[in-house]
Image 1 (tube, rainbow, N blue to C red):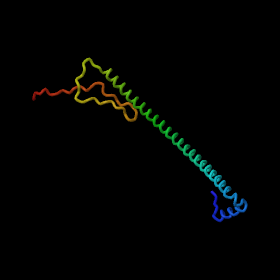
Image 2 (cartoon, rainbow, N blue to C red):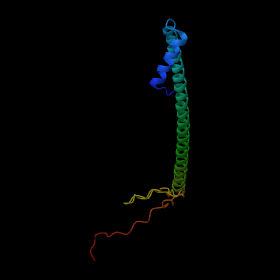
Image 3 (cartoon, rainbow, N blue to C red):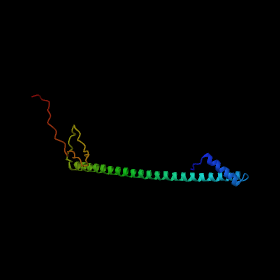
Image 4 (tube, helix red, strand yellow):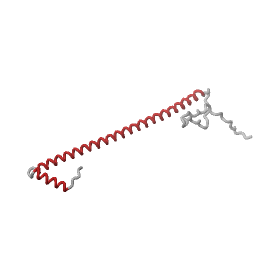
Length: 146
């Protein structure tokens, strides 16, 4: 705080002894010590209050940044969910239309290969629908040799 050397303190002490006198010097020194202690505590309290306010401001900024990041993440997840739901709803609608439009009087025999599932294209466009009717069965040998 102040740059006071030992010789300067000695000069101040001698002058105080001459001006104040030996009877009142200890009482004055004690009072000056108490006042300097109070001043130091006050300065330290102000410093710590300022430091707390700075830290609190930094925490508020950090909290607002985290809130912004959380809201952007939430909106991104909602957009992804909506796009997935739209794709799945389109696929379900196409499958329902294919099943309702291709119901013959007699059910066709199950084929050996399962029909490919309609999977939405990664670009967001709906995938082509599965064929409405399975291909006709191929003619197989009856077991008679030619």
